[in-house]
Length: 131
Length: 57
Image 1 (cartoon, rainbow over the protein chains, first blue to last red):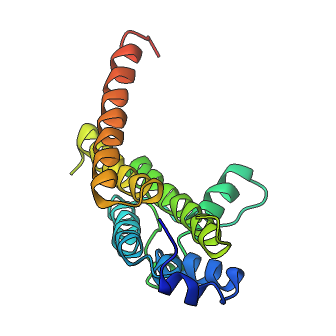
Image 2 (image 1 turned 180 degrees about the vertical axis):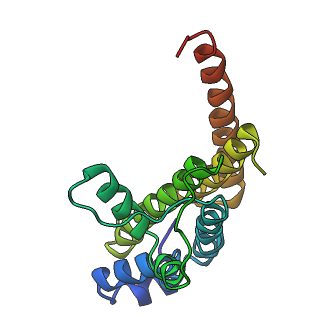
Image 3 (image 1 turned 30 degrees about the vertical axis):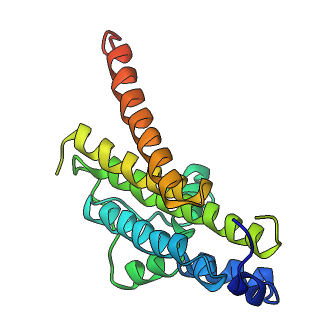
């Protein structure tokens, strides 16, 4: 896709600030840079995936350095940005290990965070003029 | 919904939407790639399930 007027306007912004916004608000980096269609899709899809993960009784893992896999899962979870902190503040994401959907919930939560990290990288590429 | 297949389809749908949106710029291309990815994920999942079925563990 060729650069639009919005792209050129956004190109003066700090790419790292764009990354921070893209991380905090899924799709925010794309919306800022004028990629409205992509930004709206991310803004709807990723929080929805995150909420489905919470409804499936998945867990938002804590940072436990003594358990590397748990710490990695926590790192992936936090990739979701602001929705992660809202869920934490509301007490959601405690996880119910005996629920039949527990592992599915974890997969939804972790992958939603990882996909948002991928979207942050895409926003960074756009800000750098590579796309 | 607690059906394993249903949850797999929902998961594949989310991932397909994000990948297709990331990798293509035009809505028609996004739709086409998303449909192919979804079919591949669901088909691959069913195939893997059948291949793993005879395993005793």
